[in-house]
Image 1 (cartoon, rainbow, N blue to C red):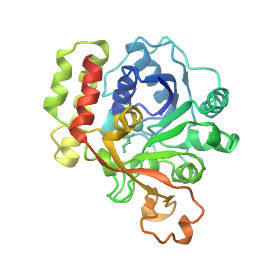
Image 2: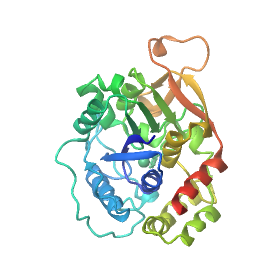
Image 3: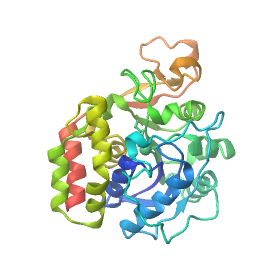
Length: 313
Ligand code: BDR
Ligand code: CA
């Protein structure tokens, strides 16, 4: 049975790869892309989402623009040194001919979940602002969603935006704390696992042999992203962040998880750090909080092979 998913995204080079991976996976029915600031401003994220669907020849899928700023702060701005000035590896892509729907991401997410109770999975691969806004507007989405599988956070490893925090959570810690605190099933695919999923240059080179519109786009945009990973981590290839969340929805057996409550630090130099409850004794900040399914280990070769197979089949 196919699963209806909404990808909430800030494309973003790895977002683009995750979206293509989902579109190529028969287990998934991508019913919409909602957009958010993060790698780029929300307006450019929306343009990029429309462009990506045009490249994939899937403009039948709606795009809905999300919030421009975090719920309790100002957006700190894009990261061109990671994703390029355009969020797509400086490709100077033509403007899309399609348009976003005339509603907000939060409202559209609520409408979809409430129209298909128990059938919609949210896959946020950017900051969690739209999801938190949707929860605030209609708390009943918590009992009507199928599942939330998000890319973000770092339970027992360092951050990437700062030594303490992962980029998606760092961009809106207050929103993240609301999402981890709601009574719904949340799986956190964070740096604990994504920094173990390495797609090497040799893996990437194999996309060049395919020659589809999607793999051609991936090959064109990846040099900027690879350059960042080489400089920042001395890495031969890229860490697979956003596609790892898509992979979990397709095949959770790729991961080992722990059941912890998560609190998000919203103050000071550790702003955006996701703190797991860890031991048996649950201390006051974590008390009365639901458990989150936190990914702590991953079968990296099998995950990379799965994504690769989907893109070349
Ligand atoms: C996350 O931050 C963004 O740069 C990526 O798209 C991913 O969603 C990784 O920390
Ligand atoms: Ca992202």
